[in-house]
Amino acid sequence: MIIVGDIGNTDVKICFFYNGIKKKYLLKTNSINRQTLKKKFNFLSKKIYHKNAVFCSVVPKTFIEIKKILFNLYKINCIELKKINLSKLINIKVNKKQIGSDRLANAISVINKNKNFIVVDFGTATTFDVITKHNYIGGVIAPGVALSLDNLIKKASLIPNIKLYKSNTIIGKNTKQAVVSGFFWGYTGLINSIILKIKNKTKLKYSIIFTGGLAHLFNKDIKDKITIDKNLTIKGLIKVSKTLNYER
Figure 1: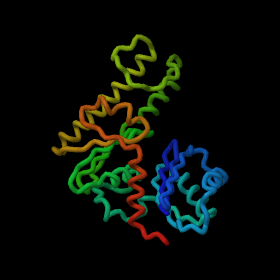
Figure 2: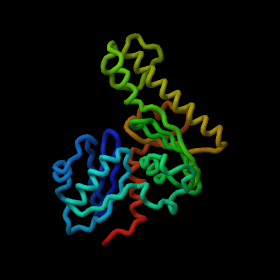
Figure 3: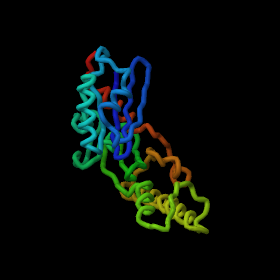
Figure 4: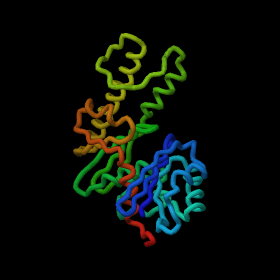
């Protein structure tokens, strides 16, 4: 069995793969407890060999809690991605401690000795990671789209609750249209500008991968050809897990 998990600031995704069966669970980060995990994972048995699980986490306290619960319930050993020797998979050109493990998982997922990638992840932050062949060379962190919109709504009493969508106009005729236009075209400009600056700085060509919740919103208005893969992080974790020696 392969078990992988992605612990984000908002959501936790845990996936199980065994005997051709695939199970995925999406939980709220602030709802993690023993009772919730036991109820969700009642199909697990200590008789099944699933001794190791690979997680990426940007919330250390939640990872520690999940690690404790899964070991106590099912004797599963949870390993944080950055605790694993990744040198056979990727050459990290920056301080490993300063990279979110979700970003490393994304980079490992796309690694290709013949290609270069820019991975844009629309999460709590909007991140840009640059991978040249088998090298992770660094990235850019910008404010997250949803987080920025939520903060604006909370701080500005006259702005109503707004769900972001693709704007077909630049000049809003009311508050809602103006905010949507500002966020949609503002982030479209930010994305295009950062990708262009990365290409100009490195003098390389890149395949552009979008992942995360709002990836679908911006892909058609970006100047480069975009591929969307919302399972990128999980795929990277699976690739790492296959390099470990699982008890069988």
